[in-house]
Image (cartoon, rainbow, N blue to C red; front, top):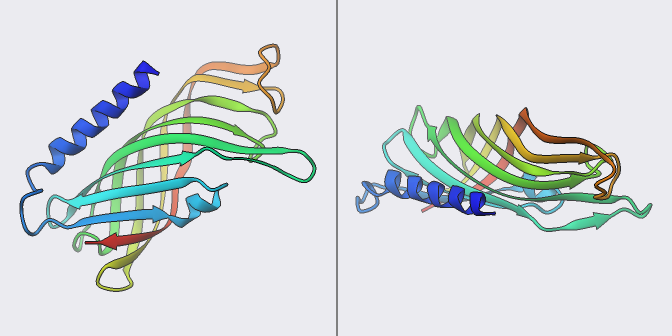
Length: 194
């Protein structure tokens, strides 16, 4: 857990250092958003904050959390428990918070999953970097709708996969660490621009 708290401190320090030069300037634009598709994923709570640091660049930081466990009528557990943080930046060719964008981020996520893509329990931590792209549609002067898609890759650490739905140390099928590349940031986000 000490490793996790150090990651949070580094992420917060990076965001503050990047944002500090522009916070006092009048032309700085702030935004907050949430991804509706994450909420559909077994109620994954998520939010992201962004600030413009130039006419074409924003920096952003966000989190995801899912403390829920659901059981189907046939007594199969559906579990996508996770918590994670990310920091990144986006480039907007036209102007910040309008039209096309491309982004990059670094991300940490702790997860415990079963029943979604596999009937086997998976537990671990994921650390990596990702890229994404998308389009932002202005709904009104303060609301946007963002559509996007991205991938992230990195390393699974302290990773365990079990041969069954429950944690049983005699039934481990994989453990240790391994590299990964996943689809990430499938988004339909509601954005409020201040």
